[in-house]
Image 1 (cartoon, helix red, strand yellow):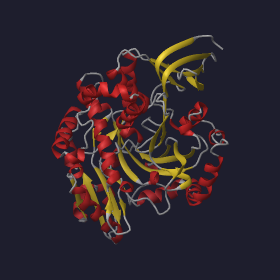
Image 2 (tube, helix red, strand yellow; image 1 turned 180 degrees about the vertical axis):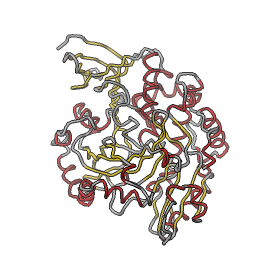
Image 3 (cartoon, one colour; image 1 turned 90 degrees about the vertical axis):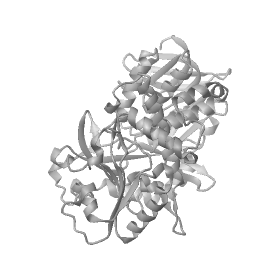
Image 4 (cartoon, helix red, strand yellow; image 1 turned 135 degrees about the vertical axis):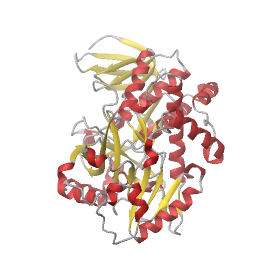
Length: 500
């Protein structure tokens, strides 16, 4: 073990999109602060942020039907869609600021314009989609949404999905032209390149073995060099844990009261991917359907155009599965190691309450490729197995905790920040919409952990994010200005997506 002991202002654990975003914000707001990053893999954005490990949707709630639930009285609740969309607009503003300031270049390498669509079959689902459309199109955030139940119109919107389709039941879709496909891996790499140029100390191949709070409130972090095996001690007044699924383990090691009793449930996924350019040219959109009855929200089927390494491909899925690993590169002991005396009852309750989910995941595990192809054929009727290959996506760890509404062992779907009352440490847990809302989530971390500084930083934050402190829903003119400016800066308005 090395005797080296280093003092730094901020420690970020994990080199994914969340740490990249928080580091980039801090470098603009407090450029003199020293920041150290530890990442156990060889480079940035290699786990959940990697472009092959997520759908890259740029979750703006334009097409995800699980963000707009039908209430018992038949009305449609769009409050979650509004929140997710407002958060995404914050991300778009910050990315635009970075491009305009020449801090990152070539936005097309990480974001492209792509229509976002919702697609349903059957009378009840068409009725739901029409009600959803009527509610959303009257909101200023979603005013550019279109609806059609005309098969001829749908053939123009989604020719690959309509080709050879037997129209024996009602069919409908909604479309918002200015959606996006985001390569979060490329964005993360750009941000870390910028951070290293700004003097941020990024230590790859370093695993954080332990962390503990000292009497003075600062944190001592032990990081092991995976190449040499040496262990270094670093002390910091603030630690952010953005280690994907492993954040649970690190939060437990930290012993933070706010994290006690929490657990995690890992879910793996697979995509069917086609790089057949004849197919790719017939589909240019992200099209989301409805999840099967009993399926978890992250299993909503969707057929997406993806831009990776300047090449378009098609992704369909995800197909859920189960692995005890908390990271794609993790250990099969991850889940078992996360069970502690303080969360044993919570985890046990979750297991009993989510038997149907467990059964669903086991059923998904047993699917062979041809059975997955049958699911794809609900979207692409003439899909051929030889045109598609299976790709393993990233691991997602859903939060398990006790809640007032759900009781003990409630499985949470979404993204959540856990922070200590003294503001000295924060951890990001959960999954989608995650990366798309990274800027809003990291601003929340700053507000929780640096409240006094945020008051001082507020004018600077507003320079970077003009809508900061405002609710976009109450300001249609600002929505229009933000749409216009961000789409222009990020190169989304001059692309040919309107020809679909």
